[in-house]
Image 1 (cartoon, rainbow, N blue to C red):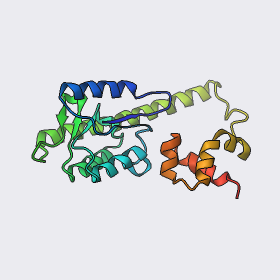
Image 2 (image 1 turned 180 degrees about the horizontal axis):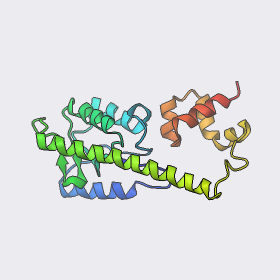
Image 3 (image 1 turned 90 degrees about the vertical axis):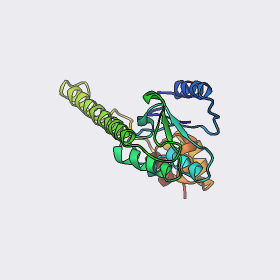
Image 4 (image 1 turned 180 degrees about the vertical axis):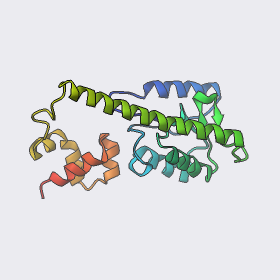
Length: 204
């Protein structure tokens, strides 16, 4: 199962429950679950969940990948296609629960014309949803600024080095233990920029 939510304000329990029930109904054995909180707008190389998926695919740890919907893979049509192709090259299909269990390739490893069209359409929809959401956020901020509800960055937003190290003390400890960037992102559920920022303020 491959599960993703966009922020720490969300949880992926519902997705896991629904996909688990789906597996029971279709007699699928769950060999691996990859679940993470990361925005789908990040590119594949900046997504530790996708990197974990690729590594597991190379090791043949599973026969199929089950997702609730195509946007769980990402919000960029090109990245979605690249991820699907990566799995297809290893004869691993993706099963989309919200599309009635549509499988991206058949048991012989072939992708039908109709399936390809459906995947392409839903990939573009996922990307368009991202664009619309981004425009709504920008519009909302501009409206708030215009009405004087937002007058700039709140006082105290810029944290000192000491504050950063205190807030991310465990992350700092792991960086000093030579944990890799991707390991830190996954272990502490933070962005790449946060890890880089903490690394810069570590005592020499």
